[in-house]
Image 1: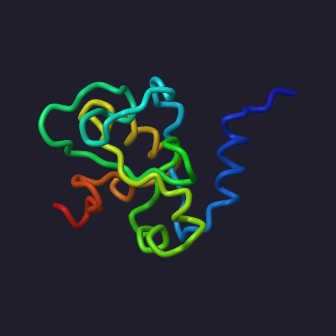
Image 2 (image 1 turned 180 degrees about the vertical axis):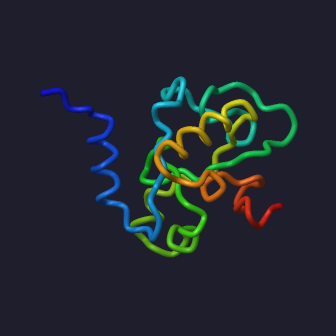
Length: 128
């Protein structure tokens, strides 16, 4: 029997997450996960440089840049000791790659506006 290991990984992370909202999974979109990026200067997904100030940001959690948090879990991430230990903070996303994240989140039944910020640390609904 074939078992989709990516779904199994998603399920195990989901079972550990204590936030009030589901976490989004973007690991399959990351081009080279072994490269360190300069936060704000390079895109998390493709590692390409971002011209000017980044317009899109996601907050990575669970000790991985493959899982992103819902904006409503910001207080939880800032105050819960377990969550804080796995909080990777904010990563910039390029204008082309943000389209891929939006599509992926929609496929997971999640609203991209709840996960992607237009300014570092500010949810999209507050930064309009």
